[in-house]
Image (cartoon, rainbow, N blue to C red; front, side, top):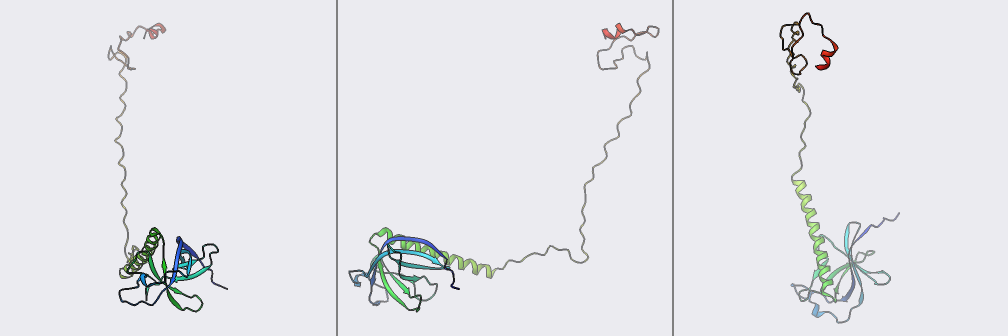
Length: 210
């Protein structure tokens, strides 16, 4: 069963030109002024990630047919190089997927903004790869140490609970004073009045006026 290809597109540039270029003649790098005037191919450029491998693809503008692919490798010869005499020209190391053979071709953008977007996209990807590599290296050099919080043999845990103290015992209720102990006793919180004499019986009219 063929391996399923997962592709994630990062950048698309609508117009790009490809050139057949001579070998590099100087240690300083490639020069665009030595390239042919007429391109061998014109189409769109796509930067994508295919099965976790980023690559620059040259595709037909109408059909989408692949003309050449440049896998961006971490090691070895740089996959994408800038020329020394222009900001719109670059060199790609294209690889044939079937034979594994590689070759160098030149690409150019008519619009400087397209060239800038291409350069930024490549730089952003390379910086992201470096950050991931540094994070992995740091994690391996400083492995996290898990702490053991389990109780060892013979160890116990004491828990102290705060108990509420009992409320103070209420004071005993004092018995009411006997009749006649005070002539101005106020038993129900109203203003005091003269209690009837011992020989005088309380009548309904008396409570009404109270």
